[in-house]
Image 1 (cartoon, rainbow, N blue to C red):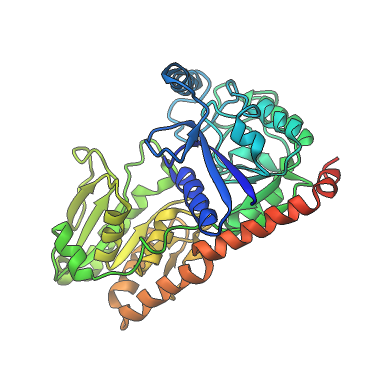
Image 2 (image 1 turned 30 degrees about the vertical axis):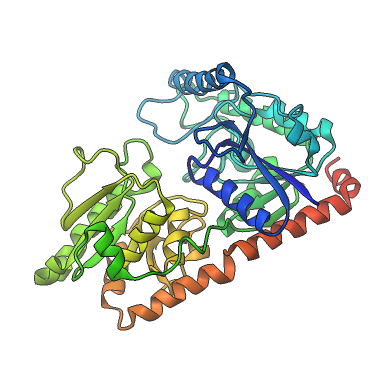
Length: 431
């Protein structure tokens, strides 16, 4: 039986962690011996392995994660909120029994003091095929996870606009050089979950010569499935007679790329357009721990807080008439896929991998990038659509056709088998 080991920093914390666990579940359903091992384990799932054998090792890992983030402040410009990872710390993984026993090593998000370039290069000693799914841009930049308009990664990082002491030989250039040296030693196949990520990898100088496939992430289509809107609203305590917009709005203190300011502006524009009918719409927000420092929203707003259950999250999508995501840069955001899988249309900016999921005026609306007016037009499109039920059907069908567990697992298995059938030829291609 084919054995695959997935390496990720966390067990389901964040989009990459969820993608890793969902792919693992999909592969298990296809009788693949698949296992996840993480750098730091939050949960109690016995099926998920960890490199920490005792409480002391776990505390050490947590300490390095915190230390890296504290030290980073000395190098990053004040006010810059773009996520950035340095390569100071890391750990060897090649002696773990599950890594040694695997036929294929599948990397996911390996930052936060998990696997730095030296430890990535060390994987070469195992002589096993390596597959790496890129959940953000960090693997091919000098440290940033979100690039915006910066194109230094296409040549060589340096003069980084995020660093205090930007120069041709700054920390971003040093990290870029470390990655370049490691990647020259390690053969691996890149998996890009979206067209946008595929194009980014093709443009990245660090990725030249690396095999590249586009395979999307997957999700539990049996959990995120269409259900009764009436029942969902009743369970969540939401009004039955309102048009409900749902969002996972986050104040933009840390993640500027989430685009919260554009969402707020577009809601004000929509209210002005609706006039006397504005009272027929309400807003539902999930994901926020702090509601005291929220801006004043123009529609009556319900705060659901952090949702820790996929079943309850699916209820949220089913209760809504439209899901709003104003992200300015995203690979293949799970909230979009989850919403569509529940049959709820999505309004989003045309950016990142969102356009791989949202088809304009088919299962949602792709607004002009950074245009609050266009985003408001998208909300109005869903509001005014003559056949919302048809749009909901198309939303669900998109996920079943392109992102279901069966479809995505089969694509991964095919690549694993190809690598195992001709490992020598693949490695020679990297020499």
